[in-house]
Amino acid sequence: MFKFNHTKVMNMLFFSYIIMAVIMVLTGIDAVLYMLVPIFFSLLLMVVLLRRNIALYPLFFFIIGIFYGVALYFNRTSDIGAFFPIFFLSFLVLYYFYFRLYPCGVNSFLIVTNYTYLFYILVSLLCYLFLPSYYRNVSLELISFRAFHGIEGSPANIDSYSVFVLLVNIFYNVRWTKWLICLLSLVVLFFAGATTPILILIIVFGSLAFLKMFRSFSVLVILFMLSMFSVFYLSLNDSVSNAMILVATNGRNIIWDQQISNMGWHNLYWGDVAASTVEIHWSGGETNNPHNVFLFLMLRLGVLFYFVFIVFVIIKARKQDIKKQLLVMAFLAAGISNSNVMYIGNPFYLYMLGFCLTSDKVYKTKKTSLQIINKPKNELL
Image (cartoon, rainbow, N blue to C red; front, side, top):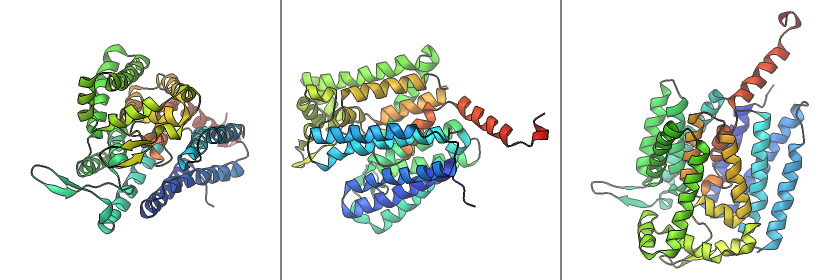
């Protein structure tokens, strides 16, 4: 008889993402990824139906998330991006429900991480071979090649994803497969032709030094966020700093400046897709993607939601061990130039964040309790 467990639910969601991402690239319809929300809901609903001892009250938060998203949508525009809050808040609640069902241990987390990554790379390789028009050329001093962009057709996913997998294996994998996965992720990072992984690794090593000296994760995150807001402020108000940030962000601060200037007082409480839609001067088109997860959350869900999210991460992560705290910092570092870590897309990003915010003590306690319950009566004495 088929039984749902922690790894199977996440594997099925991830394989669904692979299919949806390929369809998205071929059709050019980004909203295809929104299908991951009802798929995830269906998987968890089957788990609830199969397990009678599961509390259903988290579904109440799921319903609240839907109504909150609908209110945000009707308050602003009819753009397809305005549907994002409805689906994303539901996605977050489903992840909460998932970790209530399956507190995640290290072994199962590592299994899901590595098997899904290998499958992702395999499908990405097939896309690379048979869909060459979706990959740009990269020219270095001694070599020229088509960048390896993964199944999404953009390095914005595969670069952060690969460096996360690299760090997870360095921290937790004690088997010989550690070196195989690390080598594979490094090769992928090289051929992806992106610089975000370098920034992530610098911040992770800097965070390690800070935590060793001061042992305060809360202060570390606060300093990180103050630095990020300082960059926003200097980019808007100082021409010399703006020029330096322009080079450092590959021109993304031009988008940031326009979007921040478009924000109003209403953005404290709700999102505004119209405010996030700005011109791209170097291409003549438009975008609503700031390529920065913090600005993205403020524009799509409101400043209040952003601060609640950061406070929640601090409260949960400061109780965890240093490895999980460093993964959280890697997650936040990726957000400097990547909005996809908090988007309806690759399930691994929120899966990793959920793992980092979940206590191993809870997992071990529940596992021990289940083992005691399942023992024969004569063995309980």
